Every structure is written in C-alpha cells, then in structure tokens.
Amino acid sequence: MELKRWIQRLLWVFVVFLLVGISSLLHFFSSTYRKIPCEICEFQFDSVPKPNWIVIYPGLVGCGKKCPIALENLRQFQSRFPNTKFSFYFLVTDPKETEEGIQNYLAYYQTSLAIQALRPKSAEEVQFYRRLGAYLPEHPVLKQKDEHGTQFFLIPPNRKVVYALPKLGEDDWIQIQKEMNKE
Image (cartoon, rainbow, N blue to C red; front, side, top):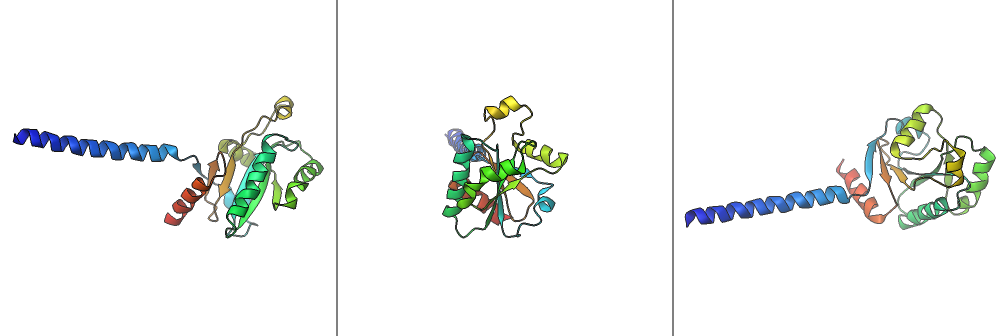
C-alpha cells in the first residue's frame, strides 16, 4: 500500500514537471519575433534621439503589393502607441535605386508618417540586414516580381539588439516591452 502511494506521488510530480516543461516550450516557440544582437545599431543610428524606438521596414521602391500594406501598418502602429517615440525608416533594398525614385515613392506615405529612407552605406550593413532577413535583390527579375520579405525590425533605445517581427502586432510589442523592462 505504501509503495502504491509513493508511485502515485512520483507520477504526479512527473506530470507536473511535464506540464511545466510543455508550457515553457509553447511559450518559447509561440513568440513570433527574433531577438538579434546588433553590432552596428549604436553608431548607425547615433543621430536618432536616444529615447526613440527605431522601426525599419525593408522594401522595394515602386512595390505595389506588400510595401503599401506594411507602411499602413507602420502608421497604425504609431497611432496605437502615441506615448512612445518612434523613428521610422524604409530600408531601400535595391542599391541601384535613385534618390529621386526613393523620394517620389515615399512622398505619399510621408503625408501621414514621418518615414525616412535608409540605405546601407557599407558591405557590413548589407550583410547585417541580410542576416536579419531583409531581402536585397541581386537580380532585376526578382525586383520586377516584388519578391521580398515582409519583416519589421524594431531597435530599442539601448541600440543593442534588433527585434525581427513578421508583423507589427500588439502582443509582440507588449512582450518586447516586458523583456526590455526586465533588463
């Protein structure tokens, strides 16, 4: 009888540990963003006021599919969090794009969103953005097909990491804020 109770207790302890472990794994994998160390963020964005969060969307000038939706998401994101200071950037992913073309493309969006063009200035920056998953087209056919990702990159005021998000969602934003407050 005593052995039977001991086995039952052991089984309950095992079940509790199993449930806690599964819960932890689900929490870990349910996070939709990635946190990546940023070696270049501090000097690349040294002109951005320190309290600002930097939000980057990599896109193609002239894109008529994904970019307009993403840029509208940036505008809505800003309006949902009016007490947070943001600096928005459109990462120009085609190095052959002209300044005039970039400004013409962004002019419409700049009427409701303070967004600036961002161009990688070095091979190191290009590699960094590729590592994040920003598509930098190397073949004109891919550009013509608007083949690029739809990630957003958030850089917190400390400029030490980049959060790569498939979409700008309130749940991820709240989770990132909690993570930042713990540091």
